[in-house]
Image (tube, rainbow over all chains, first blue to last red; front, side, top):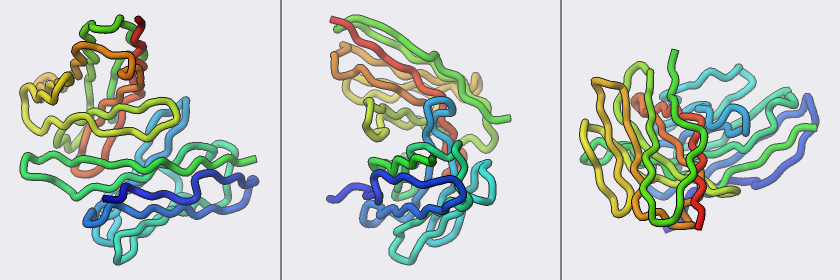
Length: 116
Length: 108
């Protein structure tokens, strides 16, 4: 079955602009979460959506927002871009929990954002 | 605050055994997970411990002790392809907090 698809894979923006990233989860997965990965900070949790509702939120400023559609596809938006927003943005989907209690994340390849 | 601690780098030879420790401090803890990431690739799932004890999946095993807020990933019969970064991640009901990652370098 198809994996998690993120678009675009690479993009370059300038400070002050805004960007929208898209994530299509594995079919049947209802949870979509977003992470920012940078060499200095590692993987940082942004937010998680489940059935179109934001279920969890990380410690990022309000410039970072997201949403989930009825088909489970998700988008995240970053407004008023700053140089420090340059990072790999990873989306992960999951079914939620299996019978053993495990919550398994399947990551997409990521969207690499460069802010100039 | 919430944090996970794991070593930054481990080097071992092919065929050896490596243990990556992870201590965590997080609220609403549900389980501990491990992910592997090769350079330029996406993180891939290795294991999840919802209960105390050892979980074995082929050459990889993972352990959790909730009372000690501690877990580890054991890599056995190391192969060159195991050279990668390994992340522990604490699951707080869908909110995953990741450690900084352990770079495993496998030498011939």
